[in-house]
Image 1 (cartoon, rainbow over the protein chains, first blue to last red):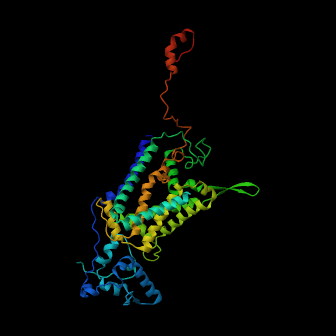
Image 2 (image 1 turned 90 degrees about the horizontal axis):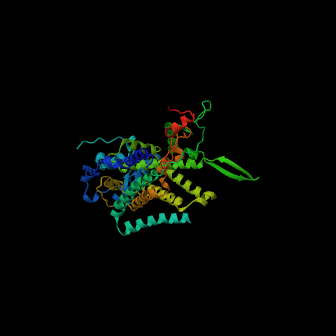
Image 3 (image 1 turned 135 degrees about the vertical axis):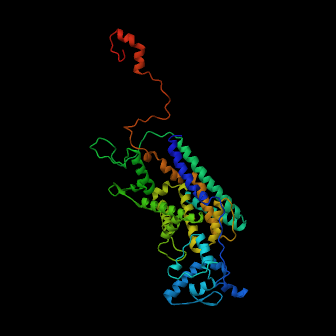
Length: 134
Length: 330
């Protein structure tokens, strides 16, 4: 090989870059997030009433869209009542409606958001709920 | 021809996912085996190609220059465009790799009425290429949030900057817009300009369609179809830690994205995309223009038997002295 030194240094840099994620994790399995829905408020409800404003599958994928819409409707359109697809009415409020049941921000919100490095800017304006460490 | 072939090749890849994942439930094959195989092909293929290039003798230096060669002291030397030293070469290479300086010098030729031949500067390809490559790099780095745990702060900062305008939720990434725009531009350029369409082959269209489809499927997945990101990260972290798991409930769009990315990785070493490594090995860019100062010996020269003057004198010294020819060594 000609200029072997330089070419091998280049290839080593390349291999180092692509191997970085493997080295960084060190081959250890990482803990997967385990969001909890066992807050006192939820446990108080009867089994068949334990449901969110929309079905779980929808909330899992689209909760950020819903919250964004709620923000726009409340702040910009002065509309504070949300009619869910099943006809029930809710007050559109992150702190008073969502967090009433899901009072465990750390175990419910942050668990997955931290895992996937998502930084929602809800708490730029809203007051972060005080939680007792359990 | 090449255009249609490439279009249907990418379409076929997407159809394969529908058959393989949705109909045949081969989640493990599409989620683990194919990505691993593609990644190995990528690494081994690139090393193989680069080593193969490295075995080719380096030619006599014919650097294409855009500046004054180092010459007499009173002639101003352009140290970057016509480098004499390794440092100059490094600067020139950095500008080439990071800012595509050669493309910046792109010109267009037009035959106007008269007939009159005219040349002009054209920066569109440079601008489109720069936007495409840089956004692609940022998008690639951003994806490491799914491959690293805990996620390093620089990646979080990059992501925050990319979503700086906080449009909608999930937050719109600026790079996604620019990337899709740039791919579209690079494609339209090939189709619309007759001369470029004439020289475009399947090997040019296929990577464009593939990368466009990767960007499209990614955007669809993030903003519209939504799928289980936590499940995806479990899958990717499983790949990274060599303990693969395939969580249930990840949408088909993810498998489409993954197969297209795998196809790109596997195709990389055997395609024009190797310019990623090749740019570092361009003889006209990475060799200093020091032909007049440093002797170039052809690497393939066989050893030539020479008979020096000293040896000649040793052979004939007596005879030379005898006829009065001056000798160097008495």
